[in-house]
Image 1 (tube, rainbow, N blue to C red):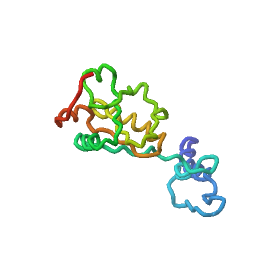
Image 2: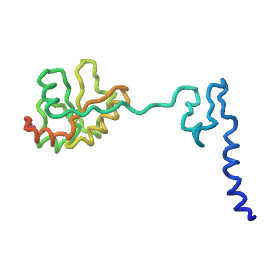
Image 3: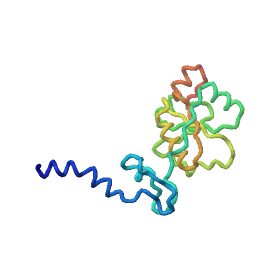
Image 4: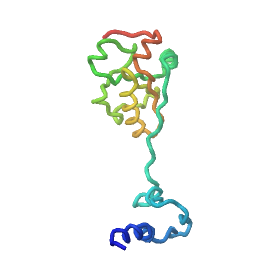
Length: 160
């Protein structure tokens, strides 16, 4: 038998042996039937804390839902498009913070209003929303389909 063939035959045994004992120090976890690599996938961080979780999910709002929230007056609408796009038209009362300058830590959400993000189609507002969710740990609302969907639904647009 060649060395290569022998190495290939022995490699699964060597990999399994390298994993060592499958019991945690407290003996509370038996992973003997778990797939290879399970220990890495379920490991905690080096300080014993749980591994970080994904950012909170995005909440898609329809143009009609956003219009209702704007009418109720307890919403802060933020447009993350470029200045050129905003000049062509924006949702009335929206603030303009371009995505390349969007800093969720500086939003100052102390006034209690809900934040709703939007862009042209929803892609950039989803990026900004992920950034905001990472800071707040809370779900973030954005206009699904962006201002394109807003205009298609017949909602008002103001020129700046």
